[in-house]
Amino acid sequence: MYKILQKALILTLVCFSTGLTFAQEKEIKKANEEFDKFAYIDAREIYLKVVEDGYTSAQIYKNLGDTYYWNSDYDNAAKWYERLINEYPSEVETMYYYRAAQSQKSINQPQESDRLMALFIANGGDPGIVKATSTDFLEYEVELVKVSVNTAYSDFGPAYYMDKLVYASSSTRSEGSKIHEWNEQPFLDLFVADMDEEGLLMSPSLLSGEVNTPYHESTPTFTKDGRTVYFTRNNFIDGKKGKDKNKTIRLKLYKATKSGDNFWTNIVELPFNSKEYSVAHPALSKDEKRLYFSSDMPGTIGMSDLWYVDILGDNTYSEPVNLGSNINTEARESFPFISQENNLYFSSDGRGGLGGYDIFMTALNNSGQPGKIENLGAPANSAQDDFGFIINEEKRIGYMSSNREGARGSIDDEIYRVQEKCLITLVGTVFDKDSKELLPGAEVFLLDENNNLVENVTVGSDAAFSFTIACEKQYSIRATKSQYAPNELVLQTPNETSTIEKNIPLELVDPCPPNDLGCRLNLQPIYFDFDRYNIRPDAAIELEKIAAAMQLYPELIIAIESHTDSRGNDAYNMALSDKRAKSTLDYLVNERGISRDRFTSAKGYGESQLVNECSNGVECTEEEHQLNRRSMFLIQN
Image (cartoon, rainbow, N blue to C red):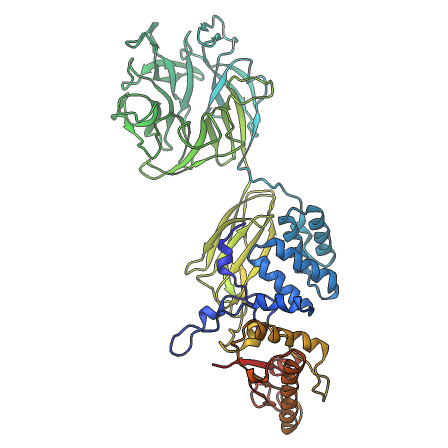
C-alpha cells in the first residue's frame, strides 16, 4: 500500500462536513504565529473510545471508515464500512458502497466486493465503473507470427521496408544454402514479407538482387524512400571472405541501392569496418543523417557497445562515436532501432531484467543523446533473449525477435508481432467548487482499480495534471489540498486511444478555531425537543465524544456554550439556551463522571452570537438556521 497519501490526509474529522479535511491544527496559527498547542488531539482515537464505550452512530462509522480509507488502511476501512452498512442501512450514501467494495477488493475479498458493488449500482451508482478489467498493466501484447514466416530454423531481426517487412532467416528455402558448422543450420539470408494494416505477415520470399550470399546476411535498415539499405553481413564481398588474426570471419556493415522496382545491387562496404572487430545491426536516425550500430571496436566499454556515425554523403562518414556509459555496460548492447518519435530501442544483457537479452527504450534528445532508460518489461521481455524490437508508434504495431519457447516449442529465434496497448491521456485541473478558482498546490493521486497508487503529482500554478493510463481499465483520481475536503472521481477508460478531461472540484471547509473541540470532533448538532432541555439519546452520542476526549486527555479544561437561532423571543431564547448548557454540563458530570472542576462555565447565549445573517426578520433556510443552533465546547488555556 502506498504511504504518500497518508501524509496528505489527516486522522481528524471536519467540522460541519461528513468528509475528512486536512491537519488544520498545523495550518491555523495564533496571532503571535505560534502553532496550535492542541494539535495533539486525535479525533480518531476519541471516536474509537466512544464506540468501545458502546455508543455508535452512522456518522461515527462513516468518519472512521473514511479516516482509514483516505489513508489506504483498507483492512480497517472495510471493518467500519461493514458496520455502517449492517447497522445503519438507511443512512448509507451511495458512494459508501463503492468505498466499502474497494476496501474489500484491496484485502482480497472479491465476492464481498462484488456484492457491495451490486449494492452500489442498485442505489444509483454509475454501472460504467464496475466493468471487469485486467489486473495487470501490460504495455505490449506479444504473439508469434504465422508459420509461413517463422520456420523450423532461426528467424529474427525484422526491419520496416515501405509497406513490407524484411528479416533474416536460415530457412532452406534458398537454393544452395551453406550449412553453418556452429549450429548446423543454413547460413542466414534476408527475406521480405508483405504486411497488411493489422501487421499480419504473408507471402515471404528471398530479397531479390545481390544482397544475399552464401554467408550470413541479417538486420537491415532501409531509408524511408525504400531506395537504400544498410545491412549486416559476414566479412564477404566480391566473392572473397576476410578473417581476423584468429582466423575468425567478423561481421561488417554494407550498403546497397535499389535498381528498378526491386533489385538490390551496388554493394558497398562501409569504411569504418575492420576485419579485426565486428560492426553490425544498423539503425537510421529519424532524419536519416546518422547511422547507429553495435560494435566491439576499440573504445568499447563492454563486450559490444552502441555507436553512431554521421552520414556525410558519397559513402563518407564521421568517426564512430560511442554512445557512452549511460547506455553501454560491461556486457552486450546491440540491435538498436530509432522510432518516428525519436525513441531508441535496443537490447542489453548488462542491465537488470527478466533474463538474457532484454529490450530497453530511451528517448533521444535533439542531439541524439539518450535520456532515462526503461525496461519494456513483460511480455515484451522474457527469461530468454529478446531483441530486434521495432515499432510503428502511430499504428501501435511492431515486431521483435525472441528465442523464448514459441508455439512449436522451438528454442530457435522467432519473430513476434507486438501490439502496443491502447493508452489514454488523462488531463484536468483542480478548482474551488464554489468560486471556480484554480487551486495551485493541490495534490492529485492516481490509483488503480485495487486502490494501489499509480502516480501522484502536486499541481503547479495552472492547477493542471496529466497522467498516461491504459484503455479499458478502472481508475480513481483523488485530490487533496489544505483547508479543503478531499474528493475522489472514478472513471472507466474507453477502448480507444484518446484524451479524457476530468476536472476535480474541492469544497472549502471552514477551519476549526484552535480551541473549538466540538468542531475538531465533527460534533453533530445536539438537538433538544421543542421547549425542552433534557438530553435526548441522539444528543448523548455526540456528548460521548466530548466525554471520551476529556477521559483520554485529562489536561483538557472546557467551557460549554449553547446557542439558538433567531426564531422566537430574544429573552426566551437566552434563558432556554442557558438551561440547555447547564443540562449538558450535568450530563457530562453526573452520567459520565467528568469532574465539575474541569468546566470553567456552562452558559447560554441565545441568539446573540449568530454565525450568519439569519437575524430577526431575515428569511433563511432550515439549514442556515441550523448553523446557529449549536453547542460549543471550548478548550480553555
